[in-house]
Length: 289
Image (cartoon, rainbow, N blue to C red; front, side):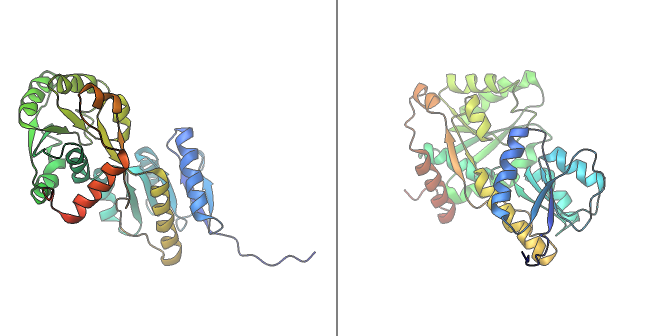
C-alpha cells in the first residue's frame, strides 16, 4: 500500500522532578494538550547533549537548574517553579526562558481569606529579614480591597511563637507566603496550634498545607497549567520564542472542613469561595458588600 508522506512532528524534551507519579501526570496532561503537534521525549540522566533549538520542559526547580547548567542556550519552559525562583532567569533570557508560575499570587490568597471571613480587615504576615520582600507588592495592593497587612519579623525558632502571638493580636487571620524558613514541616504544627488556640485561621501557602491543617488555600489545577503550557509551547514552535512567564488564569480553592468545624467557622462551598475571589479581584473593591 502506498503511504502518504508525513512531516515528522517537532520534538519537545521533558525533564522530570524525580517524583514519578507527578512526572507521569504532568507529562500525560501535556501530551494530551499537544496531540499530534509535537512529540514529548523524556531526557534521561545520561543524555547530556540536547539540540539547542528544541524546547525543553522542566518540572520543578531542580530539573530547571540541571538543564540550564547543561546547556545555557536551551529554550526552557519551566513548570512547578515559583516566580521568585525563575524571574531572574527569564529577565536575562526573554523568549528563551519562560514559566508557568506555580505559587499563588499573594493578593489572591489574601482574598481567599476575606471570602471566608468577610468582616476581616487586617492580615498578619510572618517573615524573616531575608524573606520580608516577598510581601512588598501585596501590602501595596491591599488598600483596593479595604484590607491592610503588617509584617512581623522572626529570624529564629526561639522568636517564632512569641512573634506569632503578637501577629495574632493584630491580624484577623494569618496569610502564609512561600517562605520555607518559616512555613516548613518542622514549624507548621506549632504555628497552627498557636493560631487555633486563639481562634485565628491560617491561609496558604499551598494546597499541600491544607492537608497539614491550614484552613484553606487557592491553587491552580494541573489541567489548567498544562493547557497554558501547551499554548506556550505552540507559540514557541510557531514563533521561535516563548511568551513571558505568567500565572495561570484559573484557580480553585482547597479547604479543610474539619478545621473549620473545630473553630466553629462557617465554610462556604469551595467553588463559591473561588468565584468570590475572582469577583473581588475584578472589582478591586473588597468592601463592596
